[in-house]
Image (tube, one colour):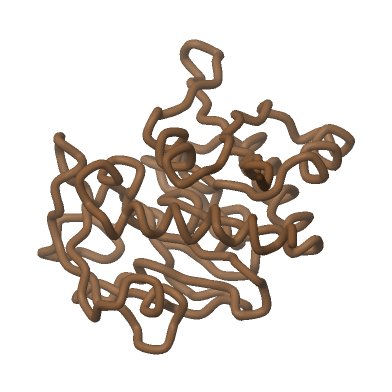
Length: 238
């Protein structure tokens, strides 16, 4: 029997409690798809990152604090809260994962840091910079869909889900503004917000703005995304 792939999860950081933590849905979704999730240490130490990149089979870039606008050469708005150490960690892991072509999945902040790291920019605050009638910052429960996204034809997400439209949950106030040159759009909302991207040059680098970690139990398409990610690690190891 083939060994289960090990998935490194970027840690969530609670500044007030000075602790790292994790939403169980990220881990349970990976487990249900056949992977072994581990929470990575919060560190921008290059030696630590190098060892973890070599140890893990793939990486899940989770939600968390806002991405620092300094990465894309903008001044921070007053309501933007960042973790510079987390930014540095995520970007270092991403660059090394791309170099080794290890599978990557980004969720919420994940799509944002991936886009910023690869040369794109973000709306720092959607309500003020891109007002919309769509609900992008829902209240609990978070597994309930609040708007639709259009799946772009002939993209990996289209091939995976076999649908042109998808109802998604949504909980964010930042989003992709200028798309990074290395990325391509896989899904978008009716108000023009990019909802999913991929990197064509990678064997598997997907990123989503919505939250399958909240809906994988009730939504088969959320589970299909986790499954595609874990399957990509199994294929990578062949």
